[in-house]
Length: 361
Ligand code: DNO
Ligand code: MN
Figure 1: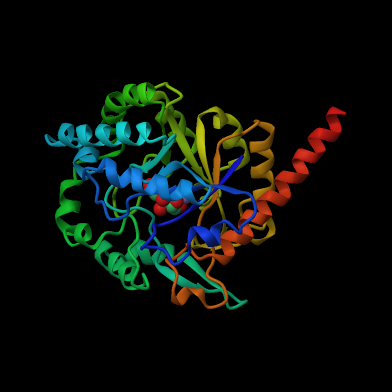
Figure 2 (figure 1 turned 90 degrees about the vertical axis):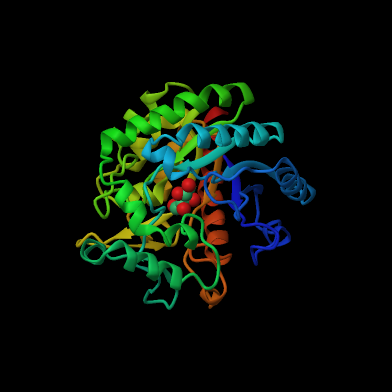
């Protein structure tokens, strides 16, 4: 596996590439042009400038997370071809600058959703938390306000205030979109972009829905083994692949992650690894990477990747906020817990490698 780290950009992240260089075994930076809203053109000069900077610090910039998809594409309305043309232009520019994988999601209206960004645990750390009955009971506007208020003044991808200002309008547009229609619109998009990806050698990696169930009556189509199977069959090309996020899928106890990884390993281009603890009432909280701390057995997850001979990109996904860093960091993206996560993953991986070498002798 190739270890990477999500970084928000030179003037947009308190964690610098010089900090990240000190975390053992991180070779790649996962980046994006975070000021771009979905549907905006990405200029070649900006792409090159970011890639050059990442490379100047000794990292690769092979993975971009995310190039977001305009709602008109998800809605399948008359403007979609215009926005798909812009998306294709971005794929070509990124490919020519050396990018190998693009992570994206196809969730209507909201990206990841939580009800509390700083839920305190017994040990005084805090983390992103989802209270099921609250989401079931309140309106999306309240959830959006909660998230925006808690962001510690930082921008959060998927939660652009400009877009959320038009929330009611957006919801209205989705009223006739069900699961089937959303799959159709996704297929239309993929049928246009995947041939370009094949030409440019850029792999697309869809991120699962978070949480992995429909919220506020909006359909969610990447949330279980069956949904993933259907997704991969929409366009059967290795360029149409997955970002397998153990945290997103793992919030539902029905998803057997090691077995899902075994089934789809040849289409997983990017692995997001994190742990979540699920409560009986359907709530969940993000925890440390340690297997015992949550419901995702990270050791088994890594074993499944190792057995599959996985050579793709991995990153610690969200982490808890430790030692007071919640006052400054972007929710889920502090330094300490993600760095601990990297070391936990290497610990398991190095042992698996050693065992394999010993067996071969
Ligand atoms: C949560 C994060 C997501 C992810 C986007 C990808 O698990 O990894 O916010 O970045 O959904 O488009
Ligand atoms: Mn993720």
